[in-house]
Every structure is written in structure tokens, then in C-alpha cells.
Image (cartoon, rainbow, N blue to C red; front, side):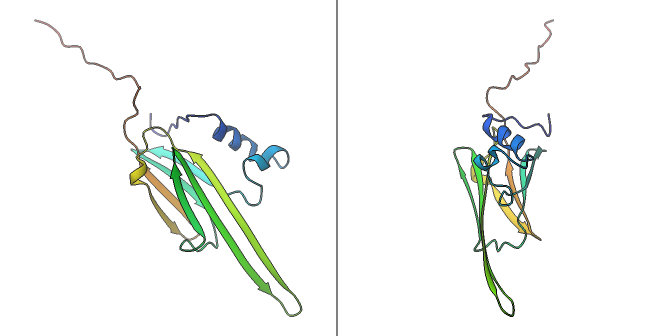
Length: 140
């Protein structure tokens, strides 16, 4: 079934449920203005995660890790704004983790950054434990 994701735990799905609330336990899963907005999908043997990260320098502000089936995107942004009579330092740290679907080949994960959008792709393989249909031959 193309496009269908199977999660190994309920926590990532629970975290996504809280993302749209303007209050409440959202801080357990990432704070509102500092949460990274993502889109994830799976099709044609590839799992893809896209993250909105405008204004980030991927060479110095961005880190992507994978550990035990969890993909984590971490970005830090610091900026100094100066006006005629005042200056202001802005700093933000952003982290988002997603559970990779079963069958993702972690060693083959690739990432690219273009026009403020990070795209992470990973090939998927067969998932162990799924039923396989056996063809029945006809005797003569």
C-alpha cells in the first residue's frame, strides 16, 4: 500500500495531535514557535521528510542524526539586529524527531537543503513479518 506509514510507537502520533493546540502539553513535544514544521510521506520505495527551515545555513546551523530508528533534525539560529539606537540578539533552537517506518535503510539516508526547505530521503526495503502470498500450483 503506497503512501501508508506504520509507526512502531504511539508517541510520535500523539505528539503530532498536540501540534495544532495553541495551549497545553505541547511543550512536551516541541514549543510552538520553535517547532519545526514537517511533512512526511512514503511512496515508490522511498520515505521522505520535508522540513521548513528558512534562513538556516545548513553548513553551520543544521544537524541531522538517526539513532535506533529515530530521525532527528536540530537547527540553531542566532542573529544580531542593529538599528540607530538599539540592538537585539535573537536566538532559537529547533528540534524535531520522527520515528522512521520499518524497512528504512538507515545507511542510505540522504539530505538536501534548497530555498529554506530541508528534504531527507531514505530508501525502504521489505518489512519483516508481513504476510507473503504463496502461489499454489495445480497438479496434473
